[in-house]
Length: 142
Image (cartoon, rainbow, N blue to C red; front, side, top):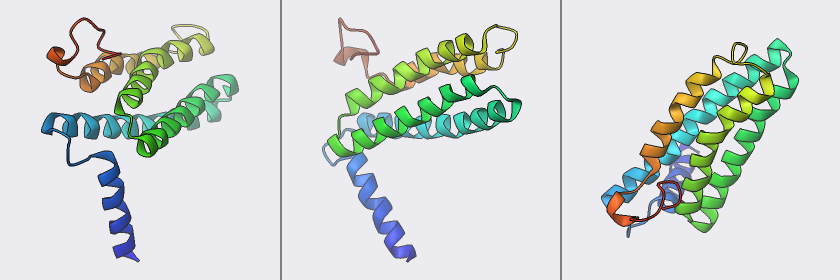
């Protein structure tokens, strides 16, 4: 049974990283998926905390974030379109903290969301490709 799990993980790894990928592409893909997974765990914690506090409307934002992240990861594994996966994850990193603060209502009540907002520039820098590859375009869309 453990052998089947290891085989499944190696097949999944081969879907994510192909033999044609450069070392930089492999690192970029690995970091993007790892960061998305870590954010997913953080969002689950946020969801539980908001649900326990009774903030129902604001708890739907992390739930939608998790659903979009899972869907984009599934789409990436299915179509192997890393540019779209990177764009979706970067957009989520940039805009979900704003939506979260808006749904809570004030900066005082949502001060913890600022920690999440601080991760947005790190996520953009982590997912971006070398500047020489995408001259004349924004880091999000290249």
